[in-house]
Image (cartoon, rainbow, N blue to C red; front, side, top):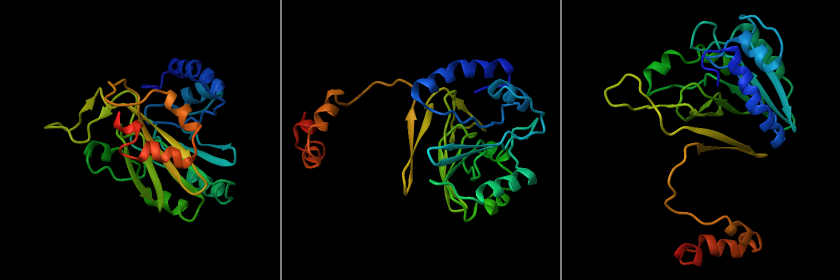
Length: 244
């Protein structure tokens, strides 16, 4: 979001996203990434001073759901680390469960990167220390980025979802290249939190030609039907909706 951590980039971000969040009634949760710089990040997004050595960790409560923004960045480097003080802080926060559980958001995902050796070099170090803190807590999902391609795994028994990017995709299997950033397949992850599970959906941001579909009016028609009628229309292979 701020490629080189420039102060002006954070001002542009707020100018773009603050009005959008207000219109949606949404709360923005910022998470430090490896391209960010802590002093400019703190000043530009929160109007506060911070030194390079101050991790930008935060806790947000949204309708009973706790979201923890964990700063895994290392000043001057692209790999990720967590200090002892951060891990102790995280353990203290998680010692009290939240009403609807906790989502942990951090830029460097704590999972292997088997297809991109370059990304593996700049992953989160000492992941076992974080696993020890998370074990047995109310964390229901871990959100990450950094890789520039989508990935999913588990960590300390917790599902991990890695979003790709809106700027470019890192091709995880390029032909005769060590790394290959491509201008394609940009996407965002949409996360739905239910009482008993979390669903992650990958939504492309690029415009593509539609090859099949139905007009928006169909939704209004379905809303007037019973569940059984909806199933017959949408699921039955020879229904008017599916047979054209």
